[in-house]
Image (tube, rainbow, N blue to C red):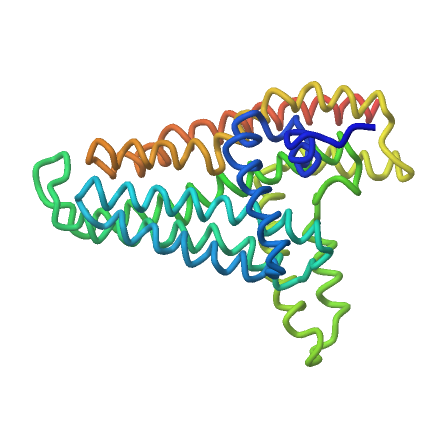
Length: 312
């Protein structure tokens, strides 16, 4: 038997080809996998890789402060590098079996740190620059950035992450998905004591529960459908329903990917290359928000249809 090729080994680390396409395979997953192999050989812990990712990604934002193409190119490289490490830490954890709660928390925290740094330094850069209406941006760029990041960006990524986990649930079942619920996380949090061993886990579950509650509030039709599925099929979703749901959900996976990292960063880089970084914020507020609403509308609509069928 021949040994698997590099491509086959990288594909084995992907959650599914439905939710990760060719761009992720070649641009993100393959470099991340090669870094993971190096870190494994060097006996580097996955948490150390995550921390490096956080530092490098945060440093990228600093280089976007400068109205200088050379400095901006350095920042772009650092952000891509951080993303490779963000991919490598999970692959390394699976390779070595070194999976920890703190590692999972830091991994989820990494992207927030990167983009907070990016927004912060873009605001510093643009505060004194002229806005399209002929006056300096001043406080307005901070307000626009806060809305773009804390509201638009956060909701877009949360919804995209949720839809991919929903898709994986119907594709692979519970074991192949991270489709958690607010009720489940709250119950687990309340079951843990305020002890020296569990207090950190308890706090994590509080905030993670709030995150899942936000996802659930954006998807009421899916929640009704999901509740019906769990009550009607406690031993597992029938194959026919799984296949039908996958067929309906699959076209939306490309939009879920657009709402997360790659397209967002592509537009950020383009706006920096042309010297108009506020275009990136406008893109989040308009194009990505419109796409979020469209994706949610389509997903909710077919979930409502499936729910009605099950109620008959």
